[in-house]
Amino acid sequence: MSQASKGKSGSDALPAREELAGLLEKARQLSAQTRCLIDQALARGISHRLKADSTFVTDVDLAVEEHVRSALSGWFPSHGILGEEFDACNPDADYQWIIDPIDGTRSLRHRVPLFGTILALHVRGQPVLGVIDLPGLKRCYSGALGLGTWCNGRRLQVADLARDDTLEQEILSIGERAQFHKAGKADVLEHLYRSHPSVRTYCDCFGHCLALEGSVGAMIDPDLRLWDVAATPVLAREAGCSFHWLRRDEKSRKGGCYDVVFGKPRVVDWVMRLWNRQPF
Image 1 (cartoon, one colour):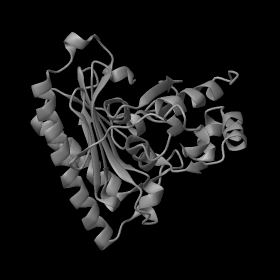
Image 2 (spheres, one colour; image 1 turned 90 degrees about the vertical axis):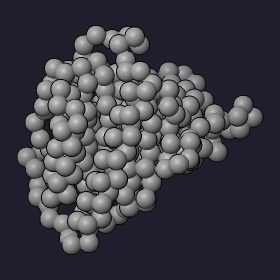
Image 3 (cartoon, rainbow, N blue to C red; image 1 turned 45 degrees about the horizontal axis):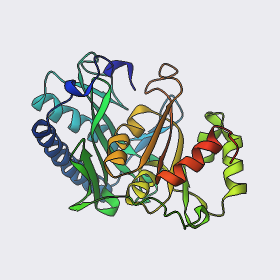
């Protein structure tokens, strides 16, 4: 987790259920507003530029993050905010909102409707609330500790792979090949391809949502920034997924550097043995 959000831990330090429900409602309101901003931007056309780290940013990324920051600062002036495009605000606050205004900017640029907006709340370093909104698909995934995970009005509960079902029946979703190389896990990717018949690239938050639905057996997503994955742990666990957040280096660059594996428990166990180079 981010250095900015660290502090006292323990379940007694976390928000009460009623407070979390109110915070979740605010986060859902924001997601509805940002979806409107994105729809309007796509209708009029978007512009983009290359950032210093060789990734693209669009005028939509900037507008969405500015809108979310403004709303959060008005509602919760003592809370911290960490986002992809602008400097951190109140980095020592116990409550840290984490924003990825457009996760999947390349998809947005090419009008592939698999991009999303991510908003999460971490309290003293623990993820307690998350929203992943997919404007192009009109799906909003949201939830909080003890409140379940929901897609629009439908509660999600991932069923584990039955003991008499084989792993080969499951789809394994992965991030892009370059992510595995950057994480030093190129050998894991090649082993996945050799040992499983259905490994598919469903990258960015779209792949995360497929795992929350149980549509794929597991999502294997290395070399992420904090804002890429900030909403996923609480959503995954509340949906019944097994989740492994493999921290590698928080200080290497803004947003840290993380590898995650999550999904149906039996499938995740198999992937984790491969990831850790253990015998099957």
